[in-house]
Amino acid sequence: MRVIGLVVCAFMLAACSGPDRAGSYLSATSANASIASSQVETDQRCKQFTAVFDALVACQRSNGTLDSFADRTIEWRVRFFVRYLEMPCHEAPTVEESYVFNAVVNDLNADADLDAEQRIAIRNAMFDGQLHCKTAQT
Image: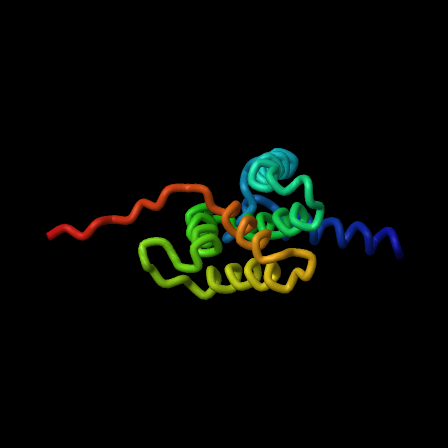
């Protein structure tokens, strides 16, 4: 009976996790390649915090939360929001963007092992891109 349960469970997991599932946010790349790519980015973003364990871990947590978006455009917008405390181009955040922003910022603010300078440095490390807003044409 136990073997049958395991077989049924395996089939259910396979049916629910296939890349052909509608609305699946999983990428076509292998999980190992995706993890390796994300780890390289985390290492670069958090490299400056390696001397202080608590700051390094907080940076990695923040980066992991922000990296949870499958849509890289949304991830970029929220990374900007975390650094500057406003959305790019004075746009309004979506509910999902606000949720992730608050998850990152609240986590940093609640971390008693960080000082204010470390919190700001971690927030700054989450976004290092350029702002490209469309200019109004007159």
